Image 1 (cartoon, rainbow, N blue to C red):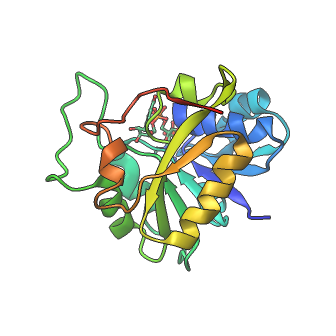
Image 2 (tube, rainbow, N blue to C red):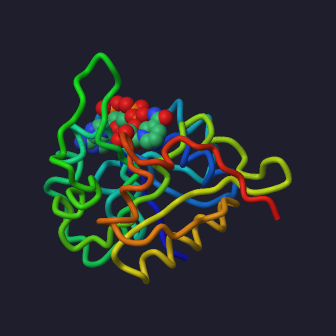
Length: 200
Ligand SMILES: NC(=O)c1ccc[n+]([C@@H]2O[C@H](COP(=O)([O-])OP(=O)(O)OC[C@H]3O[C@@H](n4cnc5c(N)ncnc54)[C@H](OP(=O)(O)O)[C@@H]3O)[C@@H](O)[C@H]2O)c1
């Protein structure tokens, strides 16, 4: 089974950890301040989630990145070669008001993440739900909560789709980074923040 890391232990990193823990899936989670500051989230999520350094989390087969946009480049800097391992970009190019909007020059933000993580197979996913919806049981109203994903590497998308399925969500492949990821990138994507459930 593929090993899993989570860089970022805030709202989204915590929600992902909770979903993994609910299925007993092991993961190493990291923040910027060090493993000793993660005892609260570890106590909350349960035994399959362990605290680690950024480098330890980044060494896994599938690595979630969930830090604020202005910190994404630094969170990826100086890491060992990705060698084709999977990086799941959960980030949106925005920050909370009253902080100013972020200018990505009209680009798909995941294309920028790809440039900051050369050698990684990047898939955008787990970014379009408000964290309180993401952390809920994905079984909802007799159906499954929808998760969109997009990326340029088909094999990486198959692996991410399998993880999405294993967590109990209903994954929908939105296509590539340039076109597909924009549909659920915030701000601006028409699908952002809709809490959709696939029935049947
Ligand atoms: N909040 C939502 O509902 C929501 C919904 C969809 C998408 N998103 C996106 O998800 C991303 C994360 O948002 P969030 O709300 O989870 O942010 P958050 O609660 O502020 O958490 C950010 C986390 O990133 C960590 N971090 C920052 N720099 C780091 C570094 N260099 N190395 C390791 N960890 C680092 C922080 O650790 P320290 O505290 O130790 O610095 C913190 O644990 C953002 O891009 C956001 O746009 C958020």
